[in-house]
Picture 1 (cartoon, rainbow, N blue to C red):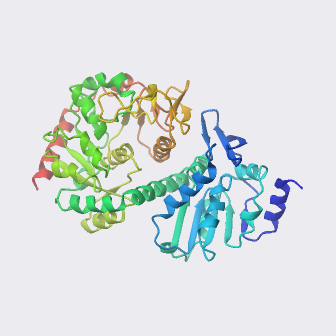
Picture 2: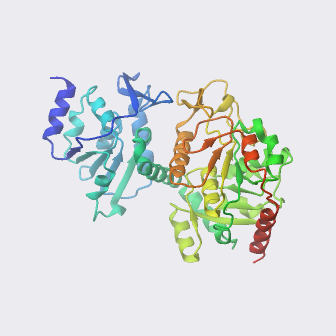
Picture 3: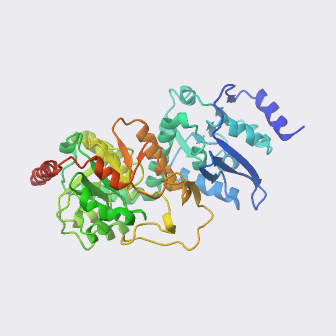
Length: 469
């Protein structure tokens, strides 16, 4: 009897396994092979636009153990573990070894065709026979939560197999976004929990105004959001002209390259809790450019920046959510990066249309950032974790990373819910579905009939009023 038949017959008999009979076909092609250690892994090809590995091709077990330990680190106590993504089973098997015998393990998977393909290639008898295990293989995401009613979620640990998120069917974009947000939140909190709390307490003690007065004040006002991707060097010079017809904002890493090009943005944003982020403004703390900073940003940033500044509370960080609720202040979805946080800030302010520039989310021309940013690097050779995905012009593929693609997917899922026009004028990097991809010159021409001067004056007056309170 084949492993496939053995597994399938066993699954059919087990009451703790639910698999839907009806499902949408997979959008991917799967190439299974053995790692250097002899363990099963898989190369996934997504509509010939993207390739990525489900597990390491060198040491899947070591990778699985590291992932589980890192994600469980944030829990001091739990009675149940929910795992999203079956993958090739390595992390499930390792989890079964790590947690105690009284801990229930529930595995969710939404890519049913992939799960069936996995069963053809290995023996999972040991995994499925574990009495602690419950498996839900379904594309009906409500089913995943329906049996959880009444569960004390303070006693539930969540482990997310990150590559499996890439296999979530496209029509389940909102579910994928929720899982990505949770993963980003837990990763950040696990890595920087003490630092973030220290930053937060210091930042709120400054008594700086929140963003309340800016909410929905700029409807039908075009804005260009500048990031520090390598492609920015292609069109940064056009921002002089663009500033006449659009407001311009930027992430912290793009601030110095803009200033070096004699372009002063209307405002900028910083979010990183680490000390290194202060390098972005270390020599320019006397600027008169408004800074919007996340409540957990490194405390040196708002303490030492002497220009106008506003604190931004974020969804997913309990202290920020509680403080915002008590203060009646709005919160934003940070999305895990400064670009995603700034983008959501623009949505909250009401800007429309919004145009991205320098948002590569890729190592375009083997670079990490535009020349002139404080952490720009050049790669001579890429490592094994590089993924190739569809380029801005859809004519080629560009090298990127899992982290970049998680941010890309965040933009894609948010764009699906937006009615306002969204443009990507990066002219390099990855293709972002849901955005119209045009050149920056074309975006400028679309808005050439708009005189932004009165709006810019209104924004500055609003900043002045709020900082004087």
